[in-house]
Image (cartoon, rainbow, N blue to C red; front, side, top):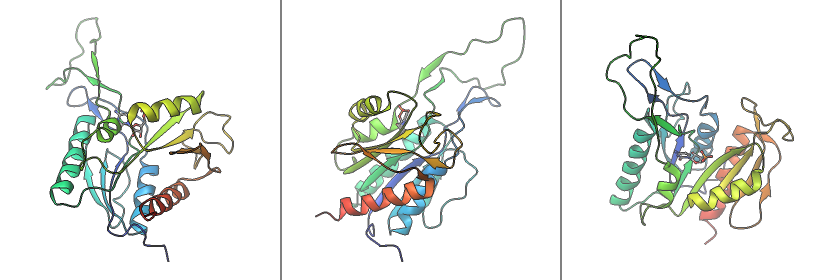
Length: 233
Ligand code: C5P
């Protein structure tokens, strides 16, 4: 049986893509499947954690034992996370950890059209984009007790990955960052759509390369590290 070392721990997880509407029928999004985030949720539940999963549109069912909130846009995802963190703090049982695996769309259109944009004249419409909020950075910079003691991010990099990931971890203010080497020459094959991830774990000490492994195994290894983190005394 799996160790129950996350029993009584509350964890917020973001997963999947976000969908940014252009008009009622069109949108900007990305190819995130949500698989890694959902695998992490499963592994956390298996160790006894109470998990709130804030998910963009994906084809996956809610992992048994987790509470799921479905959202569309980055702004909705941020609001759902802020509400979950605030509600937990208000109950006197703040979230112990937040894990941001969502592939949040970097941009949204500045002004959504309430009506389908018509193909008229010769000129295609110009879409003005504005930057979306950074959910991970926002959570990491919340005041206590909304800010969980452990905030974890992910980064997919193809080159200069270690330096870029170190800088990203500092900029976002997260405690752990799981760097996924998605370059085509990554050992074990880690490219998008592959079944294996090649992770380098960045925590408080030296970067720790993990062997190439499946997304379920990445989830289990992360959940085990969290169990150790919370039970270190
Ligand atoms: O900056 P980049 O997109 O590479 O950062 C990836 C990490 O930041 C992931 O953990 C992702 O979930 C999180 N992120 C976020 N909100 C954004 C952009 C990224 O939470 N707007």
